[in-house]
Length: 224
Ligand code: DX5
Ligand code: ZN
Image (cartoon, rainbow, N blue to C red; front, side):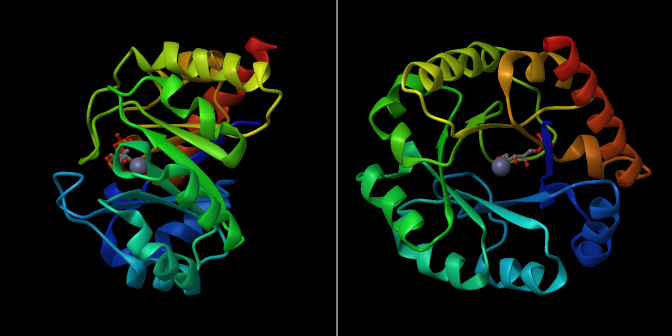
């Protein structure tokens, strides 16, 4: 079953707890927290204090996507705040293997993220060290952007690499996904789909998630 991970970047920050509860009722099990430092990504969002508040407000898994320079500096803070999953950008890590090992050593799921311009092969040596790979289907920084179609091939390439190395990390895709394209993304072979605007920029986020889940399940069945 493909998981839908709503990105809080597009949520109503004045009602986060309430919206998380509604999403849980819709069957959501992972919340995607977009952390940006205004340096690695051209936007400034949230940090460990908001993760800690979310931790108090929900038992959903907190998937922290660190779009920050030198993420090693903040791993302890996100672990202490209650992150269940921490992903770091390959482009932001001088010693990616060491960073991934540090996340796993803290008993948190370790993820490696690739920007749209970064080839999948850049992760070849660290795939045994990840619990998931996050493929960006938009350039980091903002919600509501357009899906980059080249991502579909990257998803397929990553599936091939996973099979060749006999690994079982999850494949997560992030950015520009809604009802119009979730089918082809699922058929390309993903395990987790992040969605922000297509959920929160609707009159009823709970209904929007349920429609995405239905579309993903249909595509999974068709994929066989
Ligand atoms: C972009 C973030 C994505 C984004 C997804 O930098 O990493 O998680 O919020 O939002 P949508 O689904 O609106 O593209
Ligand atoms: Zn993200």
